[in-house]
Image (cartoon, rainbow over all chains, first blue to last red; front, side):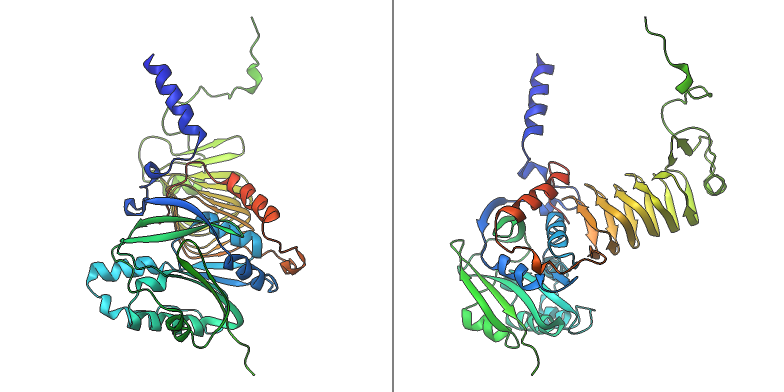
Length: 225
Length: 184
């Protein structure tokens, strides 16, 4: 009887993806807290903006999400580099060097200027104070080639939950928000004008205020005249 | 009742469970750490390097290879599948038809067909392959180059959101291991 019950449990386990209990191989701290799907309007436009470029170079500032790497690779035939900014923040929080984050971001990226076609910035700027956010934004503008695109998410609601969000691409118009513990809460919400000032070298091409209280913004670097 | 087909049996008696049969790869045998048990086994078109074997240098061949030991240098299996087992530790440039990583790889990985980093697998280096699957729970640091040689820009493709992309991403998702974990 016990064996039969265990077999049934195993069978049910195989039927559906495990969620919370699945965490914990490489980093237990990365175990998901919540996992819900939301529509996205800017992602499709970001992809469209890159589809005219052959073999684009993509920079992803979020943590590694295997299905995203596969998705963007298959959709764009791109070279994608993942630079996890959240882990940079956590490392500086642990080391007590969070004030040095602005200087760190100024020299963070080794790529040559103007060599990146698309940047997935996600919502990392929400976790930075003003100087660090400006330093990161300046570095990203430098990396982006003329006509390149940057996709950024900005929370419109203050939250003190200490979680980061992994944005898992379900399809061109749907993202799954998967939160996991962070060592630092979101900082003050950036207003529209603040964001535009951060990326003053770029042009805002689209901005969507989503029901998820995120503002999705798409930027493009103007071609030099 | 049924007569067994003895012709497919190996000539040697079956090896006891555990690390495999007699070593027969000279480079591996020469570099083995000298434990009394055998470390390199050869099945039908599949060589298995045991976990106590350390190889430094260039490893090339024309058979599928599973590595549970340590390899430093270069691995060249252009037409075959390389599997880095859960105990495998590789510090090498890797070239193969397909690479499946369950252990640790430090170095660039180039595969003509697919790179598959499984749950608990780790790659620290750049990947170049037309298909890459990274399971959640895997560790990866580097870049992924999925450039299709001779591919046209995808502009000609209908950019309508929804069905085709959804279908494609679901198909890709189908290749991922089930019960994915949160990645590094």
